[in-house]
Length: 323
Ligand SMILES: *[C@@H]1O[C@H](CO)[C@@H](O)[C@H](O)[C@H]1NC(C)=O
Ligand SMILES: *[C@@H]1O[C@H](CO)[C@@H](O)[C@H](O)[C@H]1NC(C)=O
Ligand SMILES: CC(=O)N[C@H]1CO[C@H](CO)[C@@H](O)[C@@H]1O
Image 1 (spheres, rainbow, N blue to C red):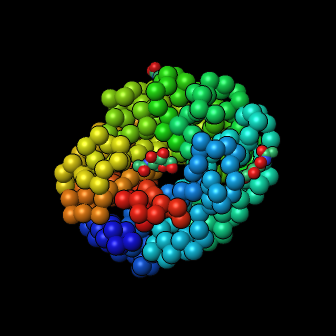
Image 2: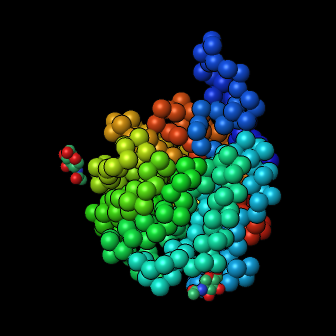
Image 3: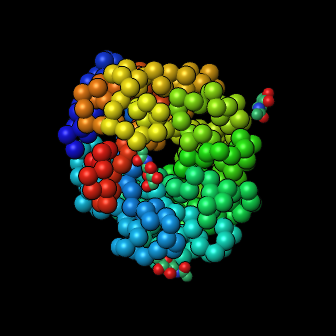
């Protein structure tokens, strides 16, 4: 929580660099903390845990985010909660099947809680482009999974749909097709007002967005509900291999360095991005790296819509990045 306070303070400071318009209303403390970003928040883990045990039992293999922690984080000025789930738990037998009532009830309950507080809930199938550990090649089945899921939330415009967490080691064209199928499936469900976050191959890394080929292969995704509703979600960790497995950050400036190419791509392509996962250890070098990265994003807030910390949730224990 100390680290969170430092970061929220840093964002407020960096966004204060730009002088407000003379007639701008006085921002509330919460607005100051969120700075220029529309979305500031935390991944709320729990419902994707225990993925080797499917469907698994509530309270034993997986859990739902704690409402009290959501309240605390909203109080700190956060307004976005990414809720990782397992595709197999929501729709178990096949992607074209029907929902499991227990899991679906748990998901709608937490989503209603978050959005009822005026915050955004990002529904994140934390599946890495896999269903029962097999790379998803049934594009129509994936579209059906999304139509069924989006129907549940079609009238809640504080919901955001994240097509899938971190596609990797897949064909670029397949990643394009899956993202496009999700977009089409969600809009077919009548969910036409919500934003959709699309993700790239190579774990959707910002630092490799261009070099991995994501920039070229995902450029032409199209949204029948309007191109302003598509947001490119990238992830960026600041340890040496960018995997988010170490408490150390490479340098105090690695944050902005790793985002620079992605920022240029967003601008050149007329797209908007969100940093859907980021984190660093609670140490001086990481704090410098994170605040530098957030300042870079605030300077480029025309293309960066916000950032989400990894991770929150009740079961992290002493996990190094836990809030
Ligand atoms: C539904 O999910 C619950 C856990 O959330 C599980 O215990 C139950 O077996 C599942 N039912 C079916 C039919 O898969
Ligand atoms: C994207 O569209 C542009 C313009 O129509 C085209 O030149 C380019 O080849 C397309 N890219 C892909 C990967 O299809
Ligand atoms: C960096 C990090 O901790 N990533 C984790 C995010 O959560 C998923 C699922 O809970 C893990 O598989 C990742 O290792």
